[in-house]
Image 1: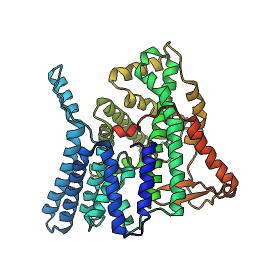
Image 2 (image 1 turned 180 degrees about the vertical axis):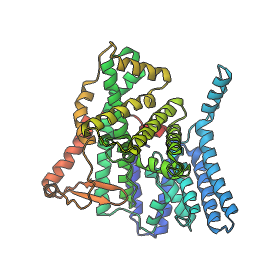
Image 3 (image 1 turned 180 degrees about the horizontal axis):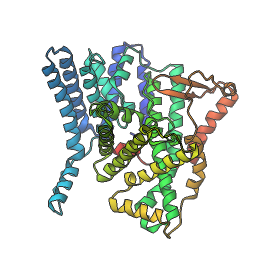
Image 4 (image 1 turned 30 degrees about the vertical axis):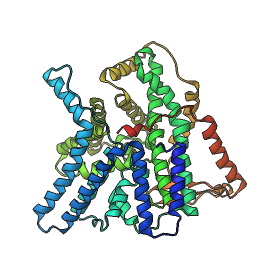
Length: 481
C-alpha cells in the first residue's frame, strides 16, 4: 500500500474517522494497532506472525531484564533479545548471500539457493525492537507496562515499512496522548505529507527516468551522460527517501504522534562527518549508539577509533542489502570518515574554502552512490571507468529530467532553520502559513487555506503534483531494505 496510492488515502481517511469516535484512549490504541496490522497485511499477511514473534520476545525480555536482580540474568535476557532479532534478520536477509559467498570461496558455480521472501520492513522493525531492550538494559527507559502499548509501538504503520527508525525513548512517552485528528494536527500533517508527495512524484520519479536506463547499460553512454546519470540518482534517492520520511512524519502527525527528523538538507554538507549527521539521521544515530559506542567509540586510542568507524560503516552498508556492492559503499564511507577524523585530529591550521569543501563532499557522495545503485561490480566498474575517462557513447538524458534539476537544487540546497528563535517571516502570514518547530520532528512549513493567497498556493501545489508528476511511479527505494 504505497503512500501515494488512492488506497492509502482511503485507509487513512477511514482510520481518522474511527479515531474521532468518542471512545477511550485504550480503545483508540486498539483500533490503531489493528489498522497497522491491516496495513502490514496488505504487503503479505503471512509475516504478521513474524512481527508478533519479534514483539512478544522483546516485550518479555525487557520485562525480565527490568525485574532481574542478578547481572548475569539481565545479560542473558538481553542476549536472547539481540540474538533473536539478529537471527531473524540474518535468516531472511542474508542466508542466500552467505550461501553464494561460500560457494564462491569453494569454487562451486551453482550454489543452492533457498526460496526466501524478504519480509517488508524487517530491517527497520528489528532495529527498533532491539533498541528497546538495550535501552531497558541500560536503565535509560522503563519497560512498557502494557503489551498493547508495545504492540502499537512496534506496528505503528507510518514508519513500519521504511522508517524513520523510531526509538522507544521517543515514542513511548507519547502513549498518554489521545490519538485522533484535530485542526492543528491535520494542518501540519497534511503540509508535511504534501511536501513528501511532491518530492516523490515531481522529483524522485522524474530523476528515476534519467537514472534507471543509464545504470542498466552504462556501456552504451558517454562519460558526460554517465555523470548526469549519477547526479540523477543522487537526487532521486534523496527525494525518494526524504519524501517517504516526510509523508511518514506527516501521517503520524495526523494521528497525533511525533516521529523523529530523518533528513536535514544533507547535500549542503561540507565534510563527510556532517553529511552523516544530516543523512538518514535515525539510522546513523542508531549505528553510533548501539554499534560504534559499544565497540569502544573513540575511547580506546586513535587506531581503534578508525577501526570502529570502518567496522560501523561496513555493517551499515551490509544493513542496506545482502550484496558486496553495499559493503563497498559502506567501506568507502567508513574510510572517508576515518580520514576526516585523522585530518581533524592533526589540528591542521588551514581549511579549504567552503564552496570547495562542499563540492568535494558532494562529488564523493555521488561517486559512492554508483556501487550502491549498480546491480553488480562489473556494472559499477564500467560506469566509473567510462565516466572518469569521459568515454564516447550515446548522449542522452530526458528533457523533463534536465528541467527538474534546477527545481531540485533549490529544494535540496536550501539551508534548514537551525535557530529556533528565528521568527516566522511576516510575509508568510499573507499565505496563512507559518514555520512550525517541533523538538522531535524538527521544523516544517504549515500551509493554510485561510487566505486567498494560501488557498491559491495549496491549489497550485496540488495541481503541479497532479499535472507534472511522472506518468508512472516506482516503489520507494528503501522498501527493498
